[in-house]
Length: 488
Image (cartoon, rainbow, N blue to C red; front, side, top):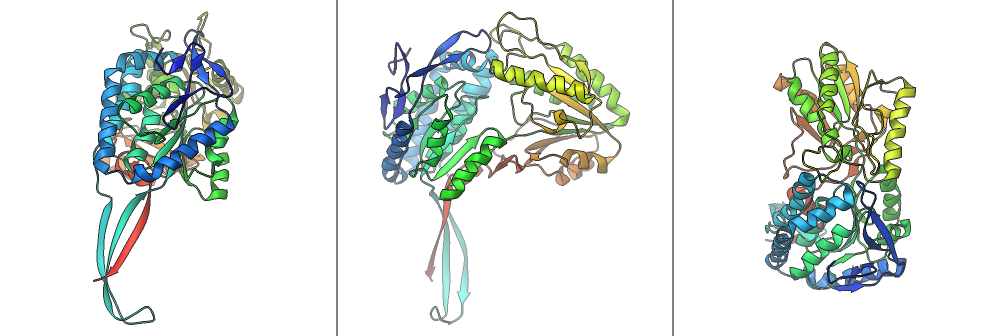
């Protein structure tokens, strides 16, 4: 328990002060044990608006602070996070159910790395070629110079996802602050306590009062207030497409800027000449990384008929090697999903797949644990593109497999989706792999890999999102472009 918690629970962080929540507290549950992790604060609408007001008040000074000073704050915050990596990871694990390796590396470790990344100062001015203007109604002939300058948007509401309570918030907060914005962070209700530890790290790093504010709650009105506040200029959201639509409607009324990373149903095209071992390991990350609760997962496998049966057999064998259970135990690969409600939702999709005619090759039954929200890694074969289990995001350790005959059919099946976040292509013919990748309507395509380049733009086509972040693209996302023009 930190100095910013009392025996009754965590406080909100508003305007540089730790504030008792008007709505009391609610319990945060460990998905692996069903024990209470802690008491999270329930903010009122007025408190959320007060946080936005504090961010508005802090914006003028912070946006005029030298970029080098802002970078120094982010660098110190990264250091604070790394010094506390083990206790922070233990809390993240308790809140989210992540395995120890995931909590330390992919959650807290990546969170620190993102603060370090945006502690690099990048140019915000781009000189443009001069233009010769002839005499006319706007003046005499002249050579006009121009400069494109990136300016901060203002107050940014960051609504974060439950699947990574460190990397996801850090990926919003760090670039937003680096560009000179101030933020109101509304963490996911399932695992908000980690985000308050991030606020402590930023406070210790010297972030001025009001620049970072954190408000949480289990009720929808907390997020609604963080979006509809008149002090908010932009909303950065990671979550479901359905919630994203509602946020976009509110943003549209106020012309608020948006950055949205929404749902996905990643297609993984496996051609007959592919390295099947590589494909199986890549597709297997759906099971092994955070129990499939990842929007970029290759959950929709399209296998060319000559290798279809072999791929299904190898995926089933891969599942058989995975240890499911306590995420704190050595060797565990698949931990729980986030909640009982989500476990029931994932299981209902497996049952739906059965009814739709899919063949359950592996999994399909609840693991025999007395406590915890566990779902067995499940493989559904012989699927067709009209099945709901093929079309809808399940967000769990479930993979569906469909056959295809040729390249044209593969592309058509891959694009037969309302989503377009990240797809994958496995082929021994590199020219074909890149040709197919270029035809896919997705924001990213992995060619013979599920790996990421953390400077590459990240975001979705179609209903998988609006805008791009990661690397320099995140700085651009949290900026407005201003043009300066003058006679030369």
